[in-house]
Image (cartoon, rainbow, N blue to C red; front, top):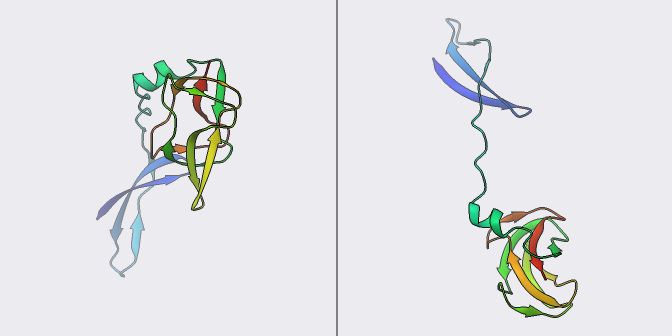
Length: 122
């Protein structure tokens, strides 16, 4: 007899499988499993999020490859702030206007979605 946890459409089920006399398997009725609540984001990221009034957002989904700017650094419109890697290409995310970096809301290696907040400027 073996126990497995199977997830179907986001719902986890505990299933017990035991081998029958004819070599076949018998499966018990699945029982829903309570999932633990997702962990909260680190406090430092939440506190820094949205510190500035100008949002720097990802243009495409990918992984943060490099952080080009640091908090407090002055940037000009078009200066690279973050580099995202998507489909083996490095895509610079640039400052939409002149300003000072108020927050960096991602870390190298983080997965980001298109439109996700990467940094803010003042």
